Amino acid sequence: VSAAPVGPGATGRLFGVGVGPGDPDLMTVRAVDLVRGADVVAYHCARHGRSNARAIAAAHLGTQIEEALTYPVTTETVGGPEDYQARLDGFYADVAARLAEHLDAGRDVVVLSEGDPFFYGSFLYLHARLGTRFPAVVVPGVSSVMASAASARRPLSARGDILTVLPATLPDDRLRAAILGADSLAILKLGRHFARVKRLLAELGLTDRAIYAERVTQGGERVLPLAETGDTAPYFATLLVYRGTEPAILGTLA
Amino acid sequence: VSAAPVGPGATGRLFGVGVGPGDPDLMTVRAVDLVRGADVVAYHCARHGRSNARAIAAAHLGTQIEEALTYPVTTETVGGPEDYQARLDGFYADVAARLAEHLDAGRDVVVLSEGDPFFYGSFLYLHARLGTRFPAVVVPGVSSVMASAASARRPLSARGDILTVLPATLPDDRLRAAILGADSLAILKLGRHFARVKRLLAELGLTDRAIYAERVTQGGERVLPLAETGDTAPYFATLLVYRGTEPAILGTLA
Image (cartoon, rainbow over all chains, first blue to last red; front, top):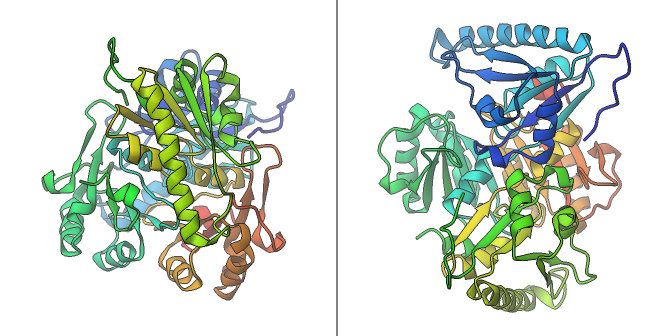
């Protein structure tokens, strides 16, 4: 995982760096080193200015130039999906131009990604715009899916199990087919879809096979059986569902 | 991710610690700290004595007691599946008894797991035997799936994509159904199933959507389009297949 060294007059390098699920100690050694040595550290921010990715890496920030990349909208409901897409495209074009200025000036840019950069991460949109123009390196990170299983003390998958990661945003028929085709599931992006997914799992007789995990490895971590949850959940919560037959996993569900 | 502190006369704690895909710098800060501070470090070994997990953590080993857990058989082909299962059960019972002696004596035991402990990891069999008798903590790690995508510079999944992790050991009909139900796939455990999976992907018109990754983040890393591979692959190789429509992923395939 190394890019060509930068000589005088050369451009900087773009690093997409996974910083893990929340606990700063779940950053990799490589991620810590790259953040500390970066000329520029960039991270996504919600409109209210908070950045989870920055919070994870905060202990390693000092004199680096910081670039906060503030999302223009917070949900897909504002103005409909087409307006949302147009705003996002404009946002990534602006951000890519800002980071390209640093790279053209020879400055190494580290983009912090919660979890892993290429697993439902927004870094992939920057990589698509900048990854062929500049030397680029992607540093994998610990995903929230693995962290949820660890916090729940419930293994994800064994031997011949099929494991499917499923965004809760999909319609019922796609969710149902994917659930029935897998032995193990991690259902992401719950938010306003939580009650619907919960109902669907009940219909399929899977409520007792499901564990809910929220803010894993962070302050306020909540891990509990699906049956004990209410009807709301934040966007970044995860459901783990096990439909398989592996005794070493089933034994941890009770 | 903390267990209750150990007082005088108390048992030791069991840690299942992911050490990542191969590059020692892809260990987490937590993993490094736990390995350094452990009384006992245990790791799985092939019969020839090599342990990839130990190699990853080697720089952090010194005066810790080491427990090499040597698999009794190397593939499921020896003596048929029932004999294999019986041998494995005996192996895990023996290993659990060895580690329980350390834990009963108050020694903290760190079990090194390549990748992540609960993602197709053998730690889950030890956790099933020891995780209720002793205080246990699971520390997630960087999975080879995320590392393969990073090395290939090909994002795994975006937005509403369904991502399925599929062991190549499954029969054709299950592989086909799982492939057609997902937008993105990581196919693991290739080994002697590689030629069959390659043929299946060709039948489904997906050869040009597939990237082969072997020994990612380690010496001898090989990442190439599926079309450029031969007919054999090691067990720990991965195929990444993208069937979805996300332009930021498709654009990086050409």
